[in-house]
Image 1 (cartoon, helix red, strand yellow):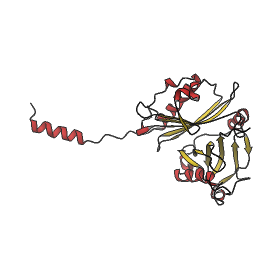
Image 2 (tube, rainbow, N blue to C red):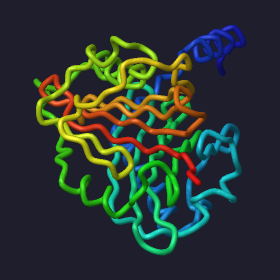
Image 3 (cartoon, rainbow, N blue to C red):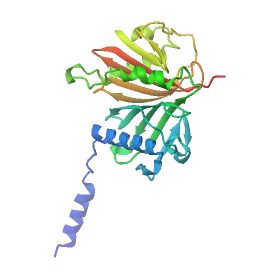
Image 4 (spheres, helix red, strand yellow):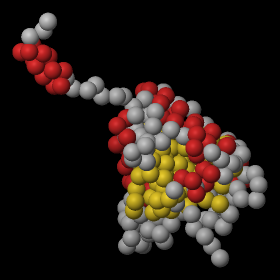
Length: 265
């Protein structure tokens, strides 16, 4: 039989052993995003594995209950794409639905606490529909389907720091006259704002003029795809829920997508 002294020593040893950190994997993030898409198609948020102790649902910058959310209505999804941020353990999913009387273009960030991709701690959605800024889901779908979002070669992937600077620089153009010139624009860059198409991206840019910085910024940065998505509130023009996504290839901006919830009329 083990002596009392030895038992105490063993208990002390095991209690002092650190718990191994769990890695946040790209595969886990994408799998969770796929479960979100499946729940949206079915209109059944109850199928999601949500954190029992710490879950938040936010839609258009307002905390809400998931039972009353967009997820509670089934939608046929015509297009979707997901980027993954293994550092912040988050993903960004774009999906477009053109069917029915209420089409949508949606950007959703999904976050996981403690690198645990088996459970979702936050679903953060910006959802634009008829009446929002430059909204036309069919036109948006047509533009975006033509884009190439293949993973970049490891040798040509932009750094996380560059991607964040590009995302911030874009949102700062409305308040900082020098921000537009800080962005490495590609000569064949394409910009899709709602359904409004501009090529090249660096044409007709704002250069300050507003005193209100675009706030509530939440980032998903994916070096593999060379992308950054920033959900925010577009305070420089109005308190509008907004998603700005930028892709960088060969060190230059290739694509810009915006989803802006602004009711008109």
